[in-house]
Length: 236
Image (cartoon, rainbow, N blue to C red; front, top):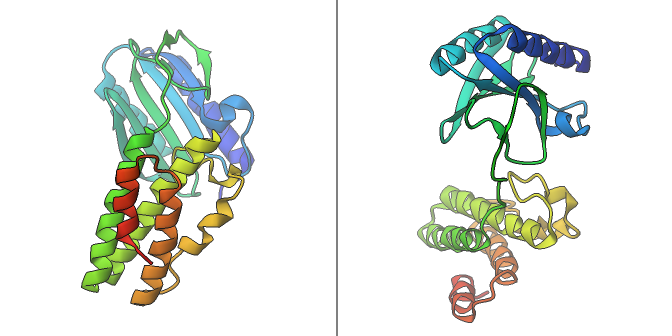
């Protein structure tokens, strides 16, 4: 398990490496550390502004991270930006974002520029409410058919996916972070979702949890025609 001291030292080392890399023209700390909300379990979020040889920079910084005891990584792409997420042997997560310098900048409030220049960028928008509603009823359709077919583990998967989207809808309504479950513990009544947890793969239990979840989704739907169709998924 990593210590806070080890994490902070590694972040300083990465900042130093960025400052001496001539291809890196800017860097920022992002995530909780950028706004003073870091805790014992926080990871490192680091963004680089690269003005040339982007692929080469990615290769060299990947080698650097493995020299720092990384044991694996996974890539997430957003347009031309690469977010390479490393797992260290100590279980510390280190996210290094490689930005073309022409696109480097804050897309949200958790961005602290360390050196270089940042562009003025559009801020990230919260999830679209209508899309969340649509995905919730889509998962609901497949939950219903999975239960009816006796595909119990598929039903569990679909109910869980449906719950994720309904919970995000609640976050939007209450004005808390609706991305990746970050605002769920700030909801006034998140305990209402306890009844949506599937406690076994027995068909009756799957139907019970699905019925409760469908009721919570109905509370987020304003269109009467859509509400009628969703109500028919789990008539109870």
